Length: 369
Image (cartoon, rainbow, N blue to C red; front, side, top):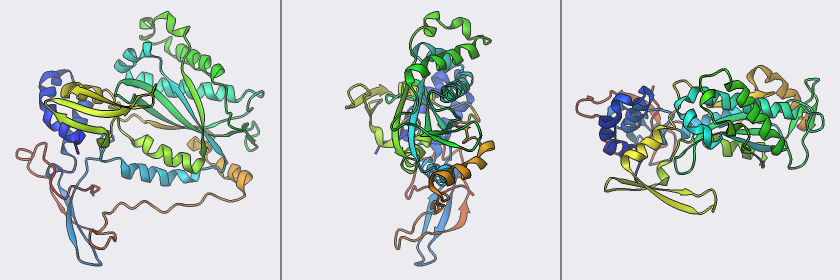
């Protein structure tokens, strides 16, 4: 199987030689981390099975949030932590998309536009939800930023996982949404657009935006996604997924990378073939600004209002949410299948002889000490 790391090892040097002086430090850092992940360059750990005596050496992971090999453990840990937020009700997925006419500007001002995308969309949803003709209260939203389309094109949008109801103005009464209906997206779209416009008026970017952007419809989508437990299981890998997984990369031949994706219009699986350097360029445009928080909580799910959740849950079900078992992070013994114990640490290999480092067997994940 072709991996993203192999593409970076093979074509990364030429890409850095061509664009290195213009590259952002975070892009260079992400490239190096992915190239070195689970190789001798990062060192490793010895694990021993206390039951059968089996030992194995496991390379350390880079833990970079843009590495496709390092996000499964993070997703499972996040999922375990979110069960305290679950409510026994239906859930919706609410999606706000930045128009195509703003995407070039957003690519060059990512922190500004990503923050604005979160704040404007959450404020628009809350403003409409407070209307007594609709829901008449405060929503709870868990939002996650995505910047890519299925073919790695730049396509910033925010997904919100939303319980099907609101907390009334008294701060404790639960008001359920109608069956399979949360908010009217035709009314939500112009509110979202107006909040983005008003927030950008004081920025240097505003003069560069064509006036037609503020007259065209903006895409807002809302759909039911089942109960909270299933929705969280769906959202956990979605939150920690990077722009492309290794499973979607099919070939790396003659300087060309071929990967598969599902076309949004036809829903059919389509192949895309790009030169190695263009593939890297498309991937790197989705590397987030340093320290950027891509998962955010609003309304009664905001950290400061979490005490309300227990009362809401009691109203809806009469019982607290179950506490899930913690995720398994230690490797399992290949002989008996039981968890192995951490042993001695092996230091990273000499960077002069192992940079970026080729993966060796067994190249499984080990969490850094």
